[in-house]
Length: 260
Image 1 (cartoon, rainbow, N blue to C red):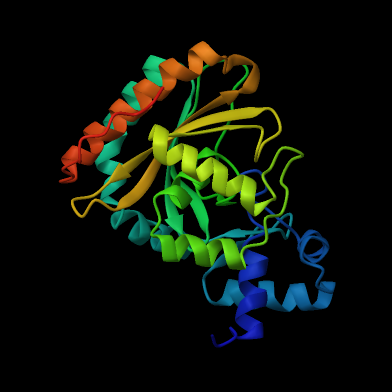
Image 2 (cartoon, one colour):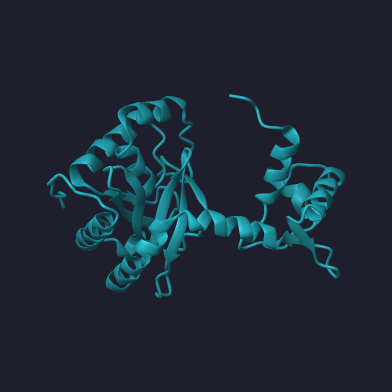
């Protein structure tokens, strides 16, 4: 595989520093976050500003993402019909469970959140839209692995670095394979504290007309609320919801009951 341009790679690394939590960043902050020198960070920021990807506040001199980035995001979102189809079901599932509901799609060797409705409870889990999370950590990632082809999964397991995000992240291939087999049996995935220390999640698959898993629907919340009884209730609600969405996408299931 051809290595990407170092200049382009550095520009993207810089753009990745901006987030919902930190939408405005200065040269020194960018330099600290990327490890670039202040002069290098300043030159790249200035170039991205000239290209219309960043704008600069005249008073603070800090940078933020420009409208062109939003236009690209809208093009990306327009290809995700799954969001429009799933949204009414996500709203109903959130109402039923009272927890945060997120929709994930596969992007390379990560999963990315493309839609979410937060719980209205005081203590809740927030799954930021656009965040990329490794597949070995959390219920949605393990679900994608379970429904990959054997070749795709074997390649992932051979190449991936199973880095810990918390002390509870699965970092051993054999243990991850055990989780994958259990998911295939149950028809949904469960995780406790695997990518966020105090969060649990339950994920169920969404399939298209070709019986290919294209998205994962996840109900997540504080681990203390995810008792055995509540897990059973949420798992049934989540799998029922994803079956409804899958049917609208043309999926015709082979009869198989989830094991709760």
